Amino acid sequence: MPRRTKIVATIGPASDSPDVLRRLIEVGADVIRIGLAHGTLDDAMARYRTVRAVSEELGRHIGVLIDLPGPKVRLGSFGDSPTILDTGAPLTLIPGRDTSDTSVLGVDYHNLLKDIHPGDHLPVGDGSVVIQVESVDGDAAKATVLYGGPVQGRPGLHISSDRLSLSTPTPTDLHLLDAFVDEGVDMVALSFVRSAHDIRRIGTEPHPRGPLVVAKIETRAAVENLQGIIEASGAIMIARGDLGTELGIEELPHLQKQITRDCISGGKPVITATQMFESMITSPTPTRAEVSDVANAIFDGTSAVMLSAESAVGIDPVNAVATMSRVAERADQEFDYDAWARRIRHLRRSAVGNSSEDKLTDAMTAAAWRAATEMGVAAIICISDSGLTVRSTARFRPAMPLIGFSPDDRTLRQLSLSWGTTTLRAPRHVDTIALMDDLIVQARDAGLVRPGQTVAVLAGAGSRSRSTDVLHLARVP
Image (cartoon, rainbow, N blue to C red; front, side, top):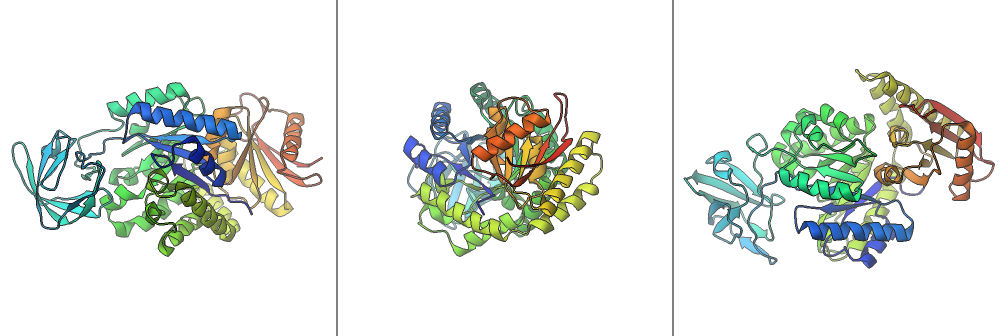
């Protein structure tokens, strides 16, 4: 069985050359993530255009996800070499300062002294370094290193989201987003989302006319407002770093399962992110625990797994993606497809407040899954201008291949995030059985199905259809 779980690979200095990008895609990257928290807009735009050129050269529908910085508080730069903060060492925190060293930490947040209190524990970066606030004065705060360790660059400083007076998206986010919307970017990740209102403030057109909005779940407020955020967004990212810091690492595995289940039930792709193969930043192989973590995320139903620093600055980005692809493919083979689909059907039947269009799509995609399973069809072909039919079908995790057709190139790139989906371009809008049969032939010619096999075709009939309302079973000519 080919791999069904998608891979998001972050690019950076170690992986942004055309040659390395080409190899990342060839060994398994489905979506390329460009983080905007570091570097300049010009640097990020150059990477974006390189991805577009390489994916076009390879003839692949590779999605590009830009990750907005959001209201993340960062320390002034320590430089490119690791700096050791010793346990017990005294520190001074100064808002507005651009640099940091072993005794003074600059912080790029002018309201810092209003939002922190004596006794606060403030994790740095991934949380391996923690400082404690001792006092807050007029223009600085005194702190002590509780847990020391190496830091470099501009690591984040975690302040509880219920204290933070910054909102999301920030003016910087919107400026960066405007530049990439003009370029036709496929997906945008919004950091530190707290409610559905934050999603609406981004102001882009609904996908696929605009980018697919990926809400990052990394705050307590986001967990409390999860259902509204899922409904307002196009996809979800479980950003386990800040989420584990804010709610406690003991809560993280259970939250991950809950968020995954709720997203997939709602037909929204979900990305599991942060420290999946962290050891591969410096090592040629992941730890056994990391491999189990990735496999368990897949067993929980995640649509995609993400590499961050492993592929952006690691010693061997191509090896990291190739290893992730092997682990994901093996986990996909052990996934309990029938049990998952039955669970999703139960969750959708008990859902309240769905529109008539949603209920029709639920019924048709569930019927397609059941018919495809009972008849042993070779593939489910989904035809959709917007990608809705594909995403709604993918949530059932059908054991057979899922082929997504659309006449819209951006839709096809956005579907690179959807579990189990192979995309093909439809030559035009499809709204008749005859045109559906033409796409079956196209899938056959692409080597995805063989003559004599039976396929299920799902589509929305008519140019005004806003739901999936046609199920067509056919034999491949």
